[in-house]
Length: 186
Image (cartoon, rainbow, N blue to C red; front, side, top):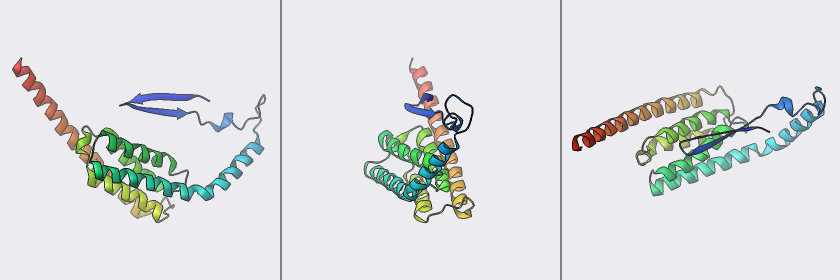
């Protein structure tokens, strides 16, 4: 199996080669192993009974990470903890039957990953993301056309993008002022 590894902002991304074509071909031939596909489908169906429990567990992990954020305040460590849990949810939600949890999880990941100053993490906005993700799971919303969930996800994305734009503008301006001050002192 091939794995592509990239690193950005101290986070390491692993992207495995998930092509099924290599895994369902009978070795030494170009024939598809339909029995392997059947076994995989049976195994997936047997596992699907556990999917709801797994998503519940992911939401519990997200709530625990949020509780720590509330106790310790926003900082690099608390936001990173939230990022990892929300990233897991983003990646697993469709497979586990909750595709609409991916939208707010993706928006939360973006917020946590791109915020220029972790200490300015917007706790209320983070709370809204966590609540949206957990509501999808709690209410067992599995229909990808559920308009309320779609609209909440859309609005969270808009607010997140707006917040990040403002924070980046503030941070950029602060760096310019700091640079000008340093130049004036020299």
